[in-house]
Length: 206
Image 1 (cartoon, one colour):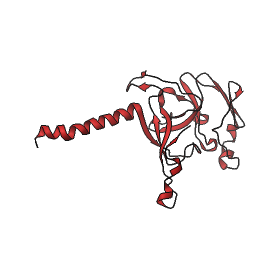
Image 2 (cartoon, helix red, strand yellow):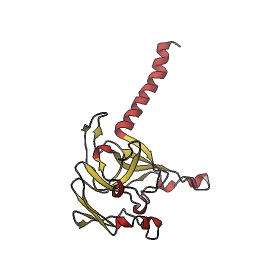
Image 3 (cartoon, rainbow, N blue to C red):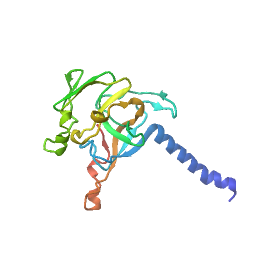
Image 4 (cartoon, rainbow, N blue to C red):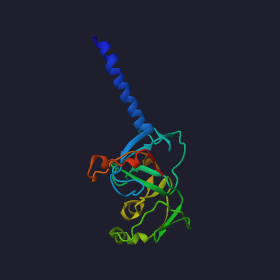
């Protein structure tokens, strides 16, 4: 087999496949694994999820530019973003407050612009040690969400390091919106069949 034929038949398809995969991962969709319980019960440790990377706009690498922004992050969206205190880490939380909104938490109730909002996502365990640890958070704010920023919380409010502790998320740090669970693995289960959480496979995230 000649060198040119080898390149055309073997190397060229591999290079094209790699480029397509990189394009999809960079601009379209990316897979993430849930490492902690901060989003329980919505997302469990071991869930493997897909994140829509273009819904908030396609980022042009090494610039601050975005193209084709279909929507802005809104309250209730679950987003993956670069952790503000360590840019080598990605966090996942739920958007609660958006730019310019006044956020206040009183006895686990969330007020936006002085109005109590419906919060079906927040989970609390009044008997947990975490609640005693988070007692000061029963009264949080009021604060105003800065420009181009978001206030985010984990659904597992007793066990989540979020905007209550380290501040806001800049919209330019957002990786994308979580939308789909394609696999879920429970490492603590005894049998192999039980380790796969079958009921969670193919579940849409809301």
